[in-house]
Length: 120
Image 1 (cartoon, rainbow, N blue to C red):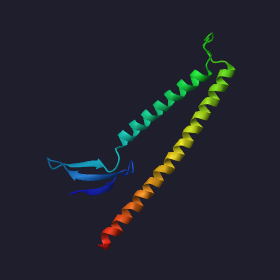
Image 2 (cartoon, rainbow, N blue to C red):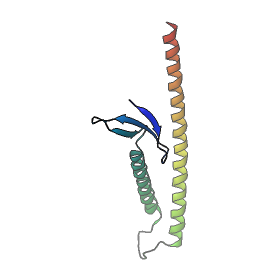
Image 3 (cartoon, helix red, strand yellow):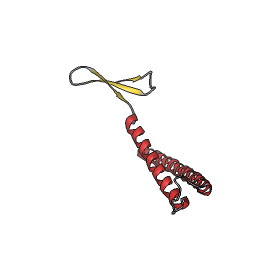
């Protein structure tokens, strides 16, 4: 028998079930939090790698006389990172809007199919 419970420490809904040996097991209901955290970490690492590669290639001097960035290189890098993040934010907003529209279309399609199925 499955009984939904709320884990008070993490506020994640849990499902309590009996295992093969008769003991109770609790399993998170919904997406796996470890998978979500790992995916998010990989996404941020990829984003950092892309930003640093793009902005370094664009802004850093090829002469490398000094171990530190010059003032102009720092300003260029700051602007580059800012523009990259702004562009990513805009792309994310457009993708979010497209996903919401697709979900709405899917819901409308399901409602239409249900109404056609109920009319027969």
